[in-house]
Length: 298
Length: 256
Image 1 (cartoon, chains in turn green, cyan):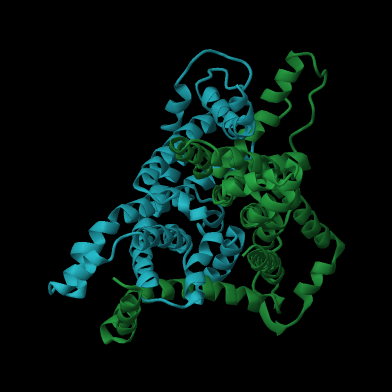
Image 2 (tube, chains in turn yellow, orange):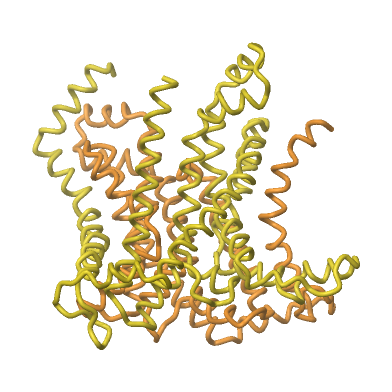
């Protein structure tokens, strides 16, 4: 069918009564479900964040900015800042491991690419508690790594690796690495090999080629992968608890405790909204960067 | 040789991803229950799984929740995919449907629990199921949509031209063509639901914890040999389901 015909067809369809019925039947139930189950709860916590905390865990209908004010409290501010730091380190590490790996996959013969990608994604689809737990097994003082190092005589005392910030970072990188590699792969895959050769032919060093040509072109993948790692890392409370020793280290732990321990719904709502706000900022940066890249590189 | 050398980064990534899983696998057959002392081969940890009431109860709850949320999400998600691909031109609607897929689980969990508490919705298997539908339908919609996007619509037009009604055309032509996508979406939804922890932890109430919630309470207290066996069973299950879904097509497109 020609393009014109197709457009006319769509026009005709879009305005016919049967298509309006089709639209309602197909989109209606799902959108209604999302409105009630995602929209309403979100609106609710926005509202809660401006209300007064009730004495028994609920809220009192008195508008206040108290909950937002708590963010300025150094104890909570440090947790938020600390979470951003840990999530950033995890993102950078995942990028450092993921970028070269994605590069190699993109260069594999076609028949191996799918296999290599499935092998990357598979761990992601298994229970993340169990994947976190595996690191307790590896990192604890009687764990595999310490035993091996001691067996080789490299250390006398076990290294206290578990229950450190480093352990949290390793756990987060481990869990979310596949989410970094996939978008990186797809943007590297799309690169025209001729571009790389052209840059070399014109006398650019590999480093310069990478920085001036390849890096900007794979920026969409870098941005997407970084968001996929950063956002869930930020809100994760299981990894800090299991590998970080159960202290209140990250926003996720705080959010959970506002419900189950402190019974402070307004402040919990504020923290949850902070996670959303950070995500939106990243999505906005991503959109801006993508638009710029498109403008410069056509 | 140079070829192999250049692939080192990928092998290192695989080592990082798979060594912990291999260690769990080895430990699950280790009679000593310790990671570094080989006490002989045993399958007794697997036996203990099946006599642990918490684990069995959790498995039952998880299965119920996963089957229920998969059925609802597959129906709603498939309809959404058709609607988005055929009738929708609004980017806002597009974004709204995909939002739950990238939405931070902790925020969804917290706001849902606040919402359920407010409207007095009893926490239990139904509330977890209803919550899992939210993100599951986004994944189903996305996979089915890819399938819809890639098929030749002239087949549909032919059916319409030959006098079949729109509904009949959908039922007899469109649905069979996109069915592998629907099955792949359903399998993915099922796996996501089985493994989901954060939202279940918030919304499942005290009576019927899902399996991940049971696992959480076990692993908080350190290394236990039964968890190793359970890990192997669950990882094996997820791998099988995802492998089948991948063969049917579409799973990798989700993130790329």
